[in-house]
Length: 296
Image 1: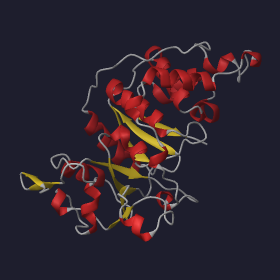
Image 2 (image 1 turned 180 degrees about the vertical axis):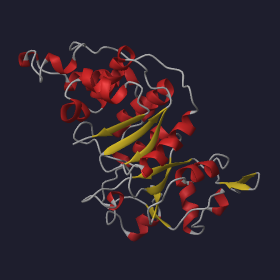
Image 3 (image 1 turned 60 degrees about the vertical axis):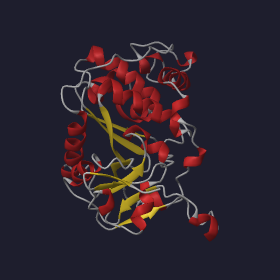
Image 4 (image 1 turned 30 degrees about the vertical axis):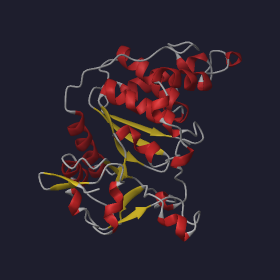
C-alpha cells in the first residue's frame, strides 16, 4: 500500500507503525520531523529469537541525548500535520534509574484495552482499595486522612472549561520543568498512540505496579482528566507521570473532589506527601497547572 501524502508530509500506510520508517529514515523526514539521533526500543531485549524479533513492532523511539527547552514544542508542531499516530513526550531519568526504558520493564501485551473501562468504576475501585480501615479511627491514618469525605466513593469532580489552550499549557510546562531542574536532562520520546493519555498503556509502562499493574486503568483516568480539566501527559519517569492542566480547580471547594481522585489514582502522593486529602488539595491541586504523580 502506498503511503498517503498531505502538504508534502508522507503519512504511513494504515495499520503501519510509523516508527518502523525511522530505521531507514532516522531523522523522520518522511514524517515531517527533524529528529536528533535516537534509538528505537522494540520491547524487552533477549525475550525473542532473531527471527521473531524481526517481526516485532517497535514500542517507542527515544533520543540518545537529553534535549532542552523548546524541543517538545518543536517536535509536536511537526507531528500535528503529519497524522502519523505518534505522540511526543519527555522521558525523565534519575540517579539509579538511568535509561529505564531499556531495562526490560515495558510490557504492553500485559495491559487490557482502555476502551473496555469507564472512569467512575475504575476510580471507585481504586478508592475502596486505599481508604482507611474503620478500625483505624479518626487519627492521621484513619478517617482524618480522607476528610471531608467518608469511606464511600465521593464521585467524580465536575468538568471545568480550560482558560488556555491545553496544548500550549503542556508545552509551557515542559519548558518550565526543564528550566527549573525538575526534568534536568529529559529525553525526547515518540510513542505510537491515539492520544497522549494512551501513551503509558501503549508503551507498556508499569511504574504504578505497586498500586495497579494494569496501566490501562490509569489511562482511563488520564483520558477523563484530558476531557474534564484539559490535562496532557508531558513527561514520564520510571515510576512517575507529569501532567499539564489547562483548567485546574480554582478553590479548595472545587479542588477537594479532584484531590480525592488523585488519592485514588496515586495514594503515595498523600501517604508520603501532604498527609491528608485536605492538605493535598490546598498544596497540589488548587490553582495548580502541574499534576505530578509518583508511585513508591
